[in-house]
Image 1 (tube, rainbow, N blue to C red):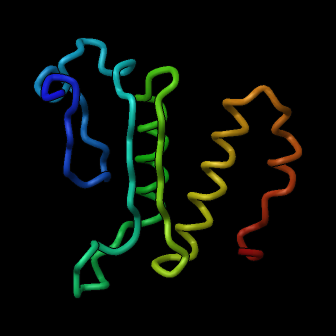
Image 2: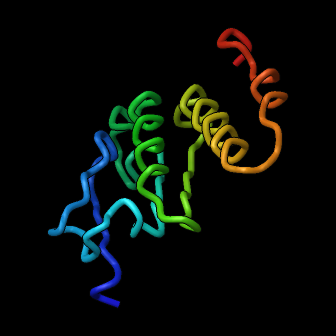
Amino acid sequence: MKNNVKIIHASHAPLPELNSDTNTNTDAKSSVSLVVYNLGYLPGSENKHTSTEMITSIYSIADAALLLRVGGLLSVMAYPGSSYMEYNAVKYFMEGLAMFSSKTDWRDFVDNLPNDDEL
């Protein structure tokens, strides 16, 4: 398992680039099987000022989606108590990704997204 798994404990902003030092497969863009995010405050931290930000989270999640191999998984935990705007942005982005990657018509989904003032 040691040669098949690489855990990168780092900031998601920007998403760390994969290269031969961090990935045993030369085709890093098709070898990533799982990307996990736990957004919001740093777990166990007393400092609630250290938190993820909506825009960097969305950029990073988009980058991660492009790194995944076919059949790969993207797991994102976002918490409305940490940042309601980040939570909603991630929720709608992930729903959009699911619709985009499925064979269903996504236009109704996009038409029903709330405006910024409705969030």
